[in-house]
Image (cartoon, rainbow, N blue to C red; front, side, top):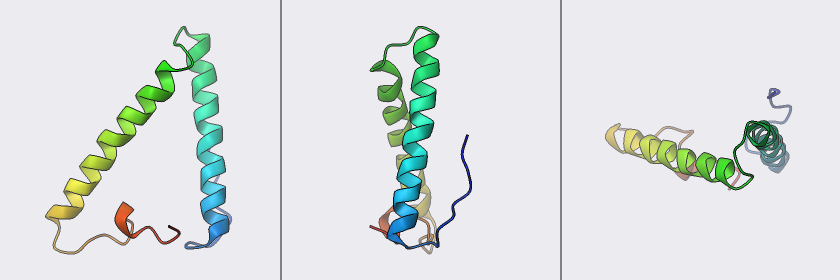
Amino acid sequence: MIDPPNQLPGTLERKVELEQTVEYAIQVLVEEACLLGWTPAEFPTAIADATNVRLSAIEEEVNFKPEASEHSRTSYPTD
């Protein structure tokens, strides 16, 4: 479902490629969830909630390490 990136890290093209990849993956998951009885709003809301929990856990992990990871959300190179 997810292909590897084709663009170099830190480029706008890579960020666009990632956004397109995520949008496609979410679309596929939502369509499948709807076929199984979830509503079009329930499943994306659950994805957002789970993402927020995961981001919080990552932030806590980064805050406990002596040095921040170069991949932490706060230092994402294409923002």
